[in-house]
Length: 184
Image 1: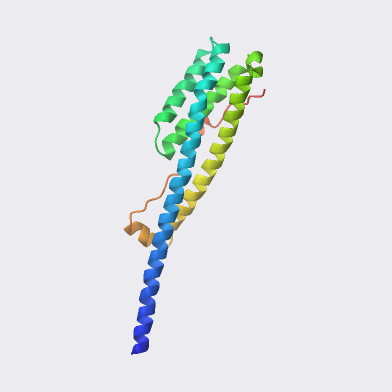
Image 2: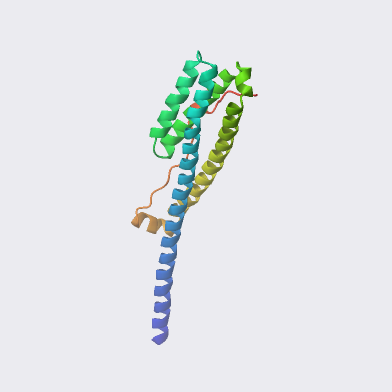
């Protein structure tokens, strides 16, 4: 009789501690996804902050290239107003494409390519693009881990009860992946 109660008590505590462990891991993974998203947001904002300086520098050299400059400004505005991974992915892709087209225009201005302000901005932009790519990779990895966790047994039971839902991957719109190649 006592052994039966001990076994029941052990099972009870195992279920309780297992449940707590699953709950805590779901919370930790959810927070990890949020943190990784914040890093993408920070880098997108950094790129957004560089764009006006780049546009102003190019504008001074190429007053008649207004369409390329206008496209960058419009795409930047879209990115600033976008929310959520899907919308930001599309807007980020559009901005990348617009920047690529602007840089293709820059090829016609050798003095601009040699300008220290322009080259400094391009270095900053290049570094930011690398940071965005790394942050996007980290975010998508954390989304994959989280989504796997909430879909596998037994954590799926708790995820459903606690209303954890799958997170969106950060994707770039297919139509903007073909950015013009630019060499300086």
